[in-house]
Length: 173
Image (cartoon, rainbow, N blue to C red; front, side):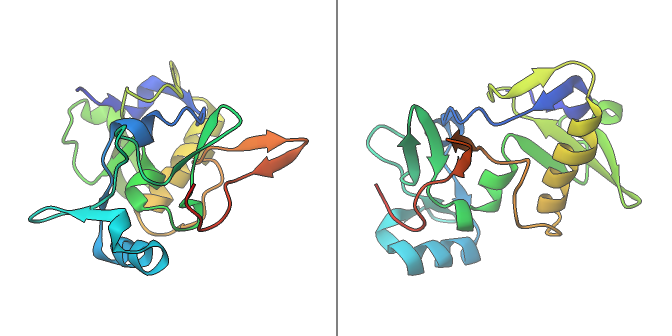
């Protein structure tokens, strides 16, 4: 699969389709694994020789994917792994996926390279909007760099009667 440089993306908004949680296995770093194990138990994770993962259900979806009114949200919203926070974007220090000039993003004097996974249905292609470049993409970069932990633009939201709805905290459906 060929990743898309960010300068070909006009905008991105999570459409709460759950595809990311259905199609991909989530690799965890040790501290993410430890938080999940302490809260939900080791049985909600799996390991290979050199990696830790979130457990997947029989249908292949993430164990923490929950459905709410025909939309999907992460039940780990308050401790969501960085891989999940960043998807569908990859923020790199080298242009590993080509298109160097179109992938380059300058942040605080640092040259980074940002690509999008075309499997995400929330991507809108074209000339990047101001909001996408200066708010949404900037938030992804700050999360990747560890500057920001809280998500505002880079997560799915459902609104019910004017209120933002998220799954119950720390419960498995």
